Amino acid sequence: PAFLVERVRIGGEWRDGPVLANLYGSWPDEALLFGVPEISNDQREMYEAVVQQLLQRLDSGGAWQRIPPVEIAAEQAPCKEVRVTGDDIDIEQFAWLQNNPADAGRYINMGSVFISDPELGSNVGTYRCQVKGPRKLGVNPEPGQHGWLLLKEMQRRGDKTAKVAIAVAPDPLTFCASSTKMAGYREDELEFVGGLRGSPLPVVRCETSDIRVPAFSEFIIEGEIPLDEFEEEGPYGEMYGYQGPRKAGNFIMHIKALTHRRHPWVLNSFTGLTWDMPKAPQVTSNFFMYKRLIPDLQGLYSPAGANGVIVIAIRKRFPGQGMSAGQYVAANPALNKLVIVVDDDVDIMDAGAVMKAVGARWQPTASLLVPQTQMMMPDPSRRTPMLSAKFVIDATRQLPQEGGPERWPPANRELLEKGAPGIFTEIDAHWQDYLKNWKPE
Image 1 (tube, helix red, strand yellow):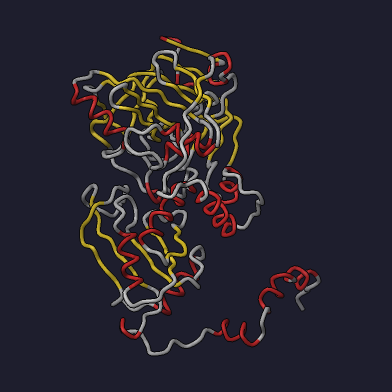
Image 2 (cartoon, one colour; image 1 turned 60 degrees about the vertical axis):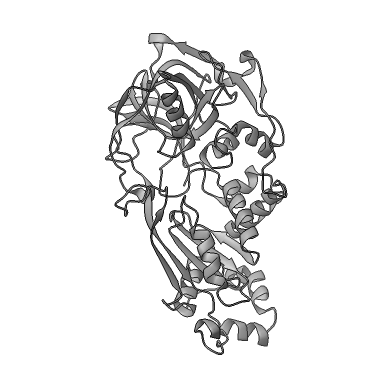
């Protein structure tokens, strides 16, 4: 759940907040964010509504609309209400949290890191930042991420430092673009933010560089990353709530300027336990991409708190269709470790319904194990970085050609619906009335 704390006791001292934690993670919230007209508390209904809403913003090739940002004057930017430079900077005074007992310290984990170069392009990515001192942070772009690739290119070019800025608690759409793969390598994420907004994102130029950052952020931390100086960073609580590794040599950032609102809010997320960013654009892009490969795809869903597990529903018509669909989805190198394929009569957002389909419709022979392939997700079970096994479960009704029964018996619910049409709709509509005056005997 989200929570708001006005003051936090850190190291025996009280720090002023407010601290807002676990802001994202609800489909009704995402529906509100992306402009779904009618909002309800039904997670399933809002999931479907927001995906349909965003599918309308993709062109025929699956590309997002892009609108360049618009620069405003510093006097108009809330993130410039307070400006601090030099030895007056003390990033430690703010209420950044140490979320887990074994974390290396306090972390900024809801910041969008801006890296920009006139020749190489730009990147905005969400990378954890360890608070190492009043004017120093550890910065952790993982190998293969766009920020890491950009810094490595600068390093190979012979650059000694990289100018960077961190927008802490930017607007939700900027945080969404920085946390997902909407933009390709060297593409400007802020143009994608404009496309999601339907209007240009207001940005302002940094104090110490030409990097342009979201003007309505709570904090902007400006500085340099030395490309020949590294320090130990971590450990840090990662996927599924397990402790991540300590890194012997990671990037650091020397802070040169700090600007923020007059009364800034600190945002925090308990990483790895559930999703901690708006994910609807990524889900929508994935659905669009897989729908082109799997025409009979009806839905896909990754349960919160089960990164690496994805359930897809298909309208099955031919032998081999379920396994073929599962292999397409498993081929994604980023996440999908376990792919479960079910028929389109299964509610993919209901874990019980999915497990019931696995129990009743799946035989272990309808499986595929890929012993070793690429996967980027930090997974506590694997021994080799960037590599993982993958597994596909075809829990669709197997046809006789696939070794399934000649005839599948009907489900009791189907028989009841056939014998009493509309019975479940009637019960749902009057459920509260049935219970209102009920008293146990």
